[in-house]
Each structure stands twice: as structure tokens, then as C-alpha cells.
Length: 267
Image 1 (tube, rainbow, N blue to C red):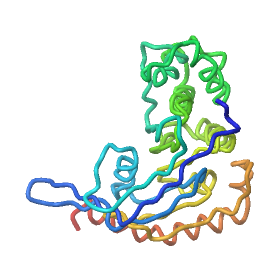
Image 2 (image 1 turned 90 degrees about the horizontal axis):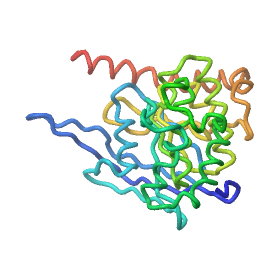
Image 3 (image 1 turned 120 degrees about the vertical axis):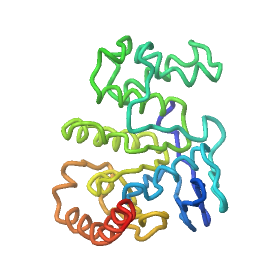
Image 4 (image 1 turned 90 degrees about the vertical axis):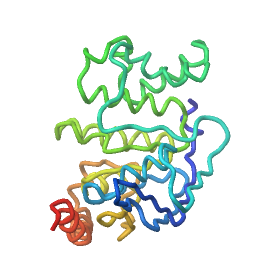
């Protein structure tokens, strides 16, 4: 792509605040959230349902405007600022896997002769080279999600934004894709912002796990993940340190989850 030369962007989020109007009521989704993210860092955000995690991702993607605060993305020239992967594989059913992956490049006016090698490399990264000419109806759910990841990576994004991309998969496919994603990000050096409900996933994948409060989202805790890269996600999850960090995160998160439940139930 060339893969070895790619590096992610630095991100600076400063006093971010976002409010939504609902009839006569205002709902504060994010309140005074600040964090610095280094180039190539993989940061996982964990928090209760409805706390504002996806809103944060949408602001980073430029799909929402904050009420106040600032987001600065310091990216190298070339490529695109960011690419997003959603919970459900959002690929076009009428296009082949290869054409789905090439879609963003073609939309930018790139000729086939220019993008073919990049699509080939993206297919290799996600292990779908043999399925280039298959349609989404002919491949599994896990393969569709790999195609969605490849479509994001092929545009050479400075930041990869991922909103619970494996939540809908069975446990076995989720474990395989977690390991593949860790390997891909180690190869590309892309900065990754990853939203998840899973403490295990945050510790297996992230360089840092950020725990958010119940709505409005504020940073309650940050865990520096000590496991070196390259990382075998399954082996890491079997270590005593993994269990200790998971317990620490749950002790921080439990009160926020209970608070979110009370708010959702109107208690």
C-alpha cells in the first residue's frame, strides 16, 4: 500500500461536549471529555449502553458537530482522514468482494490500473484473496466483516474508527477476527479508535482501555495495556495479569452500568 510505511494520526480531543435536543428536554451525551491519542495507538473505549460512545465516534468521523470543545487530527499528507467500520458489515450485496473493497478508491476517481494492487494487498491482509469475485451472499458473516475492514483500510486512512465491529458474530469467529485485526493494525500502524462493551476485547486489542461514565460520557479511568506486540490475543487472555486488569476495569465500570440501568428505567 505500501503497508510498512503507513503511520496513523495523532488525535487531540479537548473539552468535548455534545447535547441533543429531544422535545423540551436536552440530553447531554458527552461532557468535558479530553484525551490525547498518539500516532498508531489502538485505543478502546468501554462504557455502559447509551453512554455516548457511538456519539464520540460520529464526532471523530465528522458526522456530528460538537456543541463545544475541539477535535484535532494531525495526519500525514495523502490518503483520507478516517474510515469507519460499523457493527453490521455495511457492504453492497450487488457488488463482489473485490468491487466492494475498491469502492472508495473508485469514488475518488482512481483508475483500475492504479487501485488493483491496493485492493490485492487489502484482500491479502484480511485473508480474502480467494474470494475476490464472490458476492456477499456467498460468504459468511465473518468474511463480510473482514471485507468491510479491508474496504476501510484500502483508502489508507489516518484513523480507523470501529463501532463494535464484531458484536454480531459468534464467539469463535469473533476470536479469530480479533486476532486478525490485531495483526493487521500491527502491520499498518493505523491509529484505531475502537468502541466495545467487552472488557476482554478492550484488553486483548488495545494499547489503552478508556472507561467512560454513564451518560453523559466522561473519562472515569484509563488502563495502559501492558501486553507487548505482536500479541497473541488468546494467549494474552489466559494470563493472570489479564484477569487482574479485567477485574480492575469491572470494579470501575460496575457503578456506571448500574447507574445507566436506573436512568433507562426512570428510577
